[in-house]
Structures are given as structure tokens and as C-alpha cells.
Image (cartoon, rainbow, N blue to C red; front, top):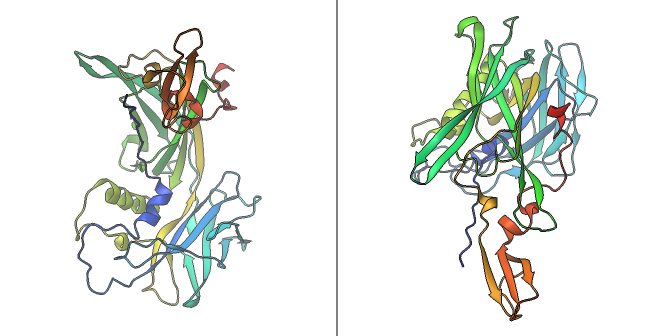
Length: 380
């Protein structure tokens, strides 16, 4: 019997900035950029509890397929507009740097990131432009609408769309970015040790909105996610936690360019990574390339639970593939890709029911066995 294996494909926003440095869309290398390297900076501060993580690396030459070089021994610190000076500590993982856990950003304050690298070119000073944290308003509402996405001879596939409303009554925040984390409960149809688990998935798309031209600068019915093939995601119980980030105008247009680059298949003369402006520069040599952005955002969060009835054709865990093997002989792949989910001891010859390990023999291959602490918050 052939067992199908589905491998989800996702690309996180943080990983994207690194991937930009060695992704190629053509075999032609423009003269003058083949040896260019750039400092890659990933990190942000918010008004939520820290510590905050910053990753520092040096890109490989744009024409190569080499990975960026994680940079150890750098000196990082953040200053504010009140003469505050906050040093970062180097982490155990090469290229990682952390703020003090007690450090937290505050709306209305202005922050500057400083970096002194320690590489073969010597100590080089980089800094960000001063960036002010804009207060984020609350998320007004987070809701879903049921939709039928397919109705044919094979049945109905019913899912939903999750939408968001928000606005700033003070009209200070006009630019938004959102991230979300999905969690859902699923149960295997067999009596196995780990039968019920909770799967978690983070958003992979860049979600932005410029509210400056909207009526009352209010964001209404912003589509965060469409679940058009729910499988088991909506079968028992589903939750989404949404983080809303306030952005300054410059950062909004930075993310907008990154979004365009990731969503459009471009050619040689479309948007190139080096053409996406960073807010980090080298004061002593402005020609040095920097990729990434020092983000300074206020954050507001809201969670939605969905426990509803949805009709779906593809309910993977309700139709686990299986096969029956007779006898006590060896089974190729047993314990690796195949598991025994039931043994018929009263049959002659002995019969064993096998299933694909990843999908049906234990839920731990696709989720966690411990119930999330927030799972019953909707019942309070």
C-alpha cells in the first residue's frame, strides 16, 4: 500500500531576510556586485516584556549559494532620547544578541541601535536612524465568517475567513503590521498512546495596512487568513492569537517593498534586495550595504476561538491509510515509517494492522501532547 505524505511549505519573515542574500533569479551577475557583501540585521523592540533577540550576520557574495556568516564578538547597544544606554549580551548561539530582560520599549520614546562588528575588515560602526515608537491601539474585533469554497460531485468543502477591525481614536497610528499564531486540536481515530494533540503554526505572509487614506483611518474587515481546505483544523477547536504592530511610515514602506518582492516573481531589473532601504547605515562609509530593519513597535494582541461545525471532504485523521499484514515475519520500515496500530491475536494466522507513522500512529509527529494553558480561556 502507498502512504501519502504531505509536507507543508512555509517561509518565516525572519528567515526571509537571510534567504535574500543568496537567492538567485538568473545566472547573469551584474558587474560590480559579485563581491558585495552586506551586514544583515534582524531584530526589534516592543513595549512587551523582553528580552529581545537580535541576529547579526554578514551576507555571502550575491552570486554564490553560500550561507551568511554569523558574526560573533559584536558590540550592540540601544540608546533612547532620555540619555538611556542599554547594552546587549551575546548569546550562546553564534550571531545572537539579547537585551536585558528588564529593558522594555515605551510608546513616544525614540530609540537608536548601535552595532560595532568584529570581522576580518576590522571594527566597523553601524547605527540606525532614531526611530520613535508609536502607540498601537487595541484590536477592535476579531471574527470569522463561514464560507463554502467547493461544492461538486465529491461533496462540500466548507471553511472560513478570519477578519479584523481596528482604529486609533487618537489618529496617531496609521500604519499596521500583523502576525498570528494558529493552534488547533486534532484526534487520531485509533487507540494509540498519543491520540490527541495540539498543532501550532505561525503566519508566513507579510500582513500590512496603510490606514491614512481610509475613512476615519479605520481598518475594517481586514482579511488575516482564509481557511479554504480545513482538513482537521476546524474539526474540534481552533484558536488564533493576533499581534498588531504599530509602524512608522518609513518602516511601513520597507515592509511593503519586502512584501512585493516575496509575492511577485521578478526578473533581473525588478526590486533587488539591495534596493530595499534599511534604517541602519555606516556613518563612516555610507556605501556599505545593510539589509534588515531596526523595528520599534508597540504591540496589542487579541485571541479568537472557533468551535463550530464545518463540512469538509478532506478530513485526514478520520481516514488514515492502513493495511493488514498476516503472519509474524519482519516488516520493512516498521518503527521508522510504519507503526502497528492493532494486532488481532485471536486470528490464525496472526494479523497486524499497519499505518503511516507520521499521520496516524502518534499525534506527536504533527503536534504537542500537552494541552495549551489558554485552551479553555473562552469558557471563563
